[in-house]
Image 1 (cartoon, rainbow, N blue to C red):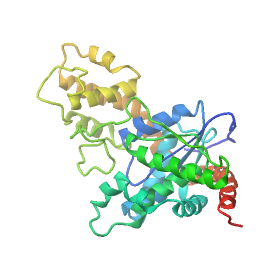
Image 2 (cartoon, rainbow, N blue to C red):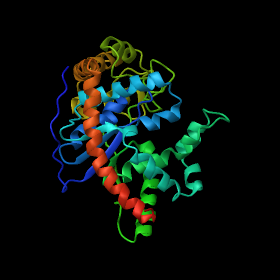
Image 3 (cartoon, rainbow, N blue to C red):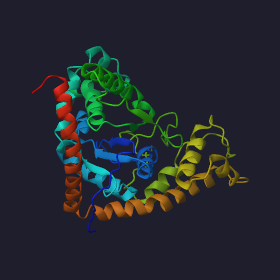
Length: 340
């Protein structure tokens, strides 16, 4: 597939939105509904900066080969889902070194105790035993740099990232106090109300995760529709049979939430269509809806991956646009710290 782009028209009157996905594993249905689908809609009303957080992925001990492959996959899926490089700044985090330079400034501004209290640091540290990468501790500072570098007004995040954004706001306040003026706005969270948390197909008490060890728990966007269908038919529901919108029936409610987010109908409307039907019908129709709505995205992404040079060129165009913003803001921040 030949990739084309035009120059972006950014309007200063629009609020700036900044967000990213980490390419530590293949992207999932949860990533699409909870993030990418929302990002596409935000392009209509906001000035959007969307990047691939490949530096963040290094905390997951991903192999170099896998990181390269996942990064290209994520780039292709961004575009296939509807991220428009003519309207949004789309680039690779590691290719804009200002992210790391601002991170160091924030590291010198942030008390160590604030980092050690991060819930995600505590949770992820348990998986590493005694060999905990330092990057896990400082991860929120890179995230804060990602946001403040572009002076974001809003940040689309999952509920599990709220603590990190609160730290970012605290650092912005400290930066503004040091400057004596509002050098950086305090970014507000944007948390979608529908499908913000797509749950595991095998344990609906947990969020669907791209790093889940159970291969049947997660729908990956680049998997075949046949595999989506098999996983959904094996999804956990409960011992009942009547399809209701009772949130305590977590497995059923999760499938209804997926249907609602993909079709645009309310959960109540989806429930009405199952009068006289059972869980088997719910699972089969969820698979059909996924194939209808996600199939074209998968097809486009696979076509885009056939032109890796085109993908890299598009991200380089975005890099230049991002760096123009980042270098200007970094100069201001360095001046605030007294750096010449």
